[in-house]
Length: 138
Image (cartoon, rainbow, N blue to C red; front, side, top):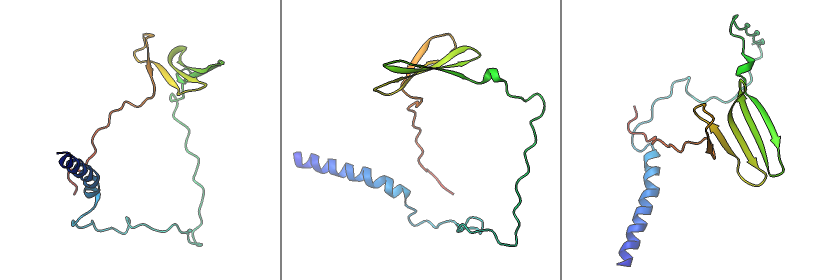
C-alpha cells in the first residue's frame, strides 16, 4: 500500500514539474515569419555621414495646467529610538503612515476612506494572482 502511495506521489510531482515546461515549448507548430523590422539587430554606431542633432526643447504646458503644490504629498519623518515614523499628508490631511522598526519589517497604516480609521498593511501587495495561461495563440 505504501509503495503505491509513493508511486502516485512521484507521478504527481513529475507531472506538476513537466506540465509547465510542455506548455511553454513551441512543439510542432510553426513559428511566425519574422518581418525585417522584427529581426534583432546588433547595436551599431550610426553611419558617419549622418549628422545627429539634439532634440528641441519641449514646449511649455498650456496655461491653467500648472501643478498645484497643495496636491503634492508632504512627508514628516520622526526618528525614535525604536522606530522611524513617516507621515504622509495631502492638503494637511493625514492619509498614510509608514512605520519602520529598527529591527523588523516596515508596515503601513492607511486611511482608505478618509474618515481617520487606519488599517494596517504589511505591504501594498493585494495577493491577487490572476491565472495568465495561454489558452490560444494566433
